Image (tube, rainbow, N blue to C red; front, side):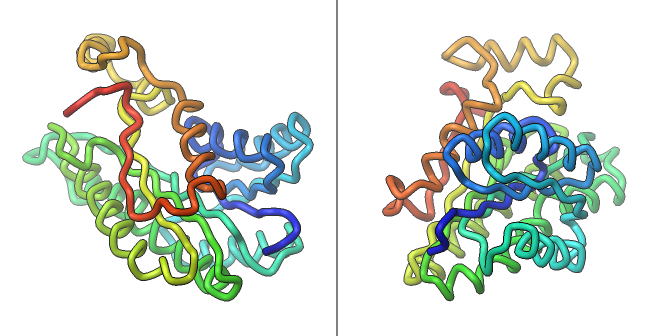
Length: 246
């Protein structure tokens, strides 16, 4: 392995992705942040100053394969490495609507950002991981993969992430590459803050721990999954939900 672990975290300009990048940085991991929001560049600088780890933010369109390929090459150059040790596929959007009202564009956007991106980014890092016989991949799905009213597109994409995780974990285990998925419940992010207060309260009523989750709750567990302490854990799907069920 390289002297310092290098990680890529997508969708990391804010919310869960930013919390994951910050957590990995506190462990001395060099992190490349990827996001379509140009603010990701400044976020990388801020976390680097706070933690002392090397972080750089890159603008990338994760639904576009060529953009992901260029992103990966830029990461290797900036981090002065020949492979990436850790990939966290976190990028995601929602375009909620009842299916009878859902447009083709709403379906297409969510499937491409939430599912295509997982293929596009993972495809870049796996050859290097195989070469060094080591790697950690964590895919951020959602408890909505079980089905949620108004989220046929989002649920389908997140269910696809689960199937991808299960399959890839079997294919890559022989190379000492673990592939796991986490399914956040109701987490306090810009996405969930847009939910009307009466709906937020309904979610809170279904959480046994009686609080909305924090991005750090997800980041802490992802940090464990990419560590050597979790080297025998692969193909798993773990809810991070405070006990909430759908």
